[in-house]
Image 1 (cartoon, rainbow, N blue to C red):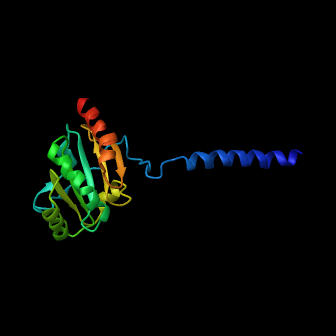
Image 2 (cartoon, one colour):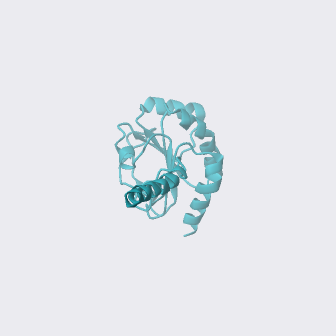
Amino acid sequence: MMRFILPFVIFLVLSVFLYKGLGRDTREVPSPLVGKPAPAFVLPLLHEPGKVFSPKEMQGRVWLLNVWASWCGACKDEHPVLMALSQQNIVPIVGLDYKDKAVDGEATLKKAGDPYSLVIADADGKVGFDYGVYGVPETYVIDKNGIIAYKLIGALTSQNLREKILPLVAELQAK
């Protein structure tokens, strides 16, 4: 009888872990950077490569960092949402053109419209790596102190904008 108790206990413990794991939202991948300072960088502007941008320039403001690329299909899906958000002028949106050719990024924005306050070029993907980019698109909410408050993996939709991003932005702007 005793020799069956240990395997049964192990089975129960594994069952609990499996049950908890299956109940998680697969779109929510925890980021170790949430709650920590956004990685510092200096990158050239996409439209004016002679000028550079650093997150320090956004100190004291809540802002979004949207990682996108001209070759990204899901980025094209989220683009109308970004355009609508930029027209509301609620929060600055900085675009990070990730592992892309500048000419392709510029052509995409010229054709579809430019929702960004400014666009920076991360041609080699080093800044994306520092931010833990899994794939594009990704959007980061960064608070007034330069702390990453939230990371959205995947396309920005009207729903996740309305339910998560905008309430968080309003909360952070009120602080």
